[in-house]
View (cartoon, one colour):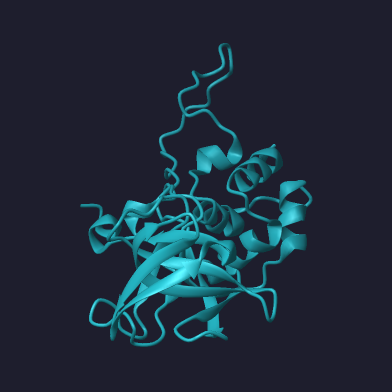
Length: 233
């Protein structure tokens, strides 16, 4: 039944039931606004029927086709000796799910160090996923705050970030560091230059400056995707 495939697809994306519910609620094409982890669990277990109301939003949230969601093999041949009922009325084929799953936009607050932000785990909204990023795992987005990277980025611009693509010299990155004061995570948008045995060396544009992050405090360096990569060119 569908429950095994919904759960399998969800876990394959590293997504919790609550996160799947959030994506469904944020889907502009969905009529569902009150989904929660309990509802997802009931659908996966077959306690709530996977009706048309749910199948489209779930398929879009998991970036899956209806056939994948239902565990059907579209290439499978018809079962032999199965009776066929002919009709002059042709059934309307289901519209395949083609909308890529949206991208989470994480919230930020003013950081304790100059030029940094405190990165929260709260998803403040969902951004439409560019077609070129369909199927890419763990892509997230942030809104630019401050002026240190002008004129390349202005406050209010959105950046898409790929945590799995290693940065090269000249790439724009999100440097995540430990906030020793709160045990949280600080984030800074900079241009990556190089890494040494002790530091991650970056630069900024406004004012021009070199910013070094002690390696012992760096949690991650995630690459900001370029406009060409987002556009698929």
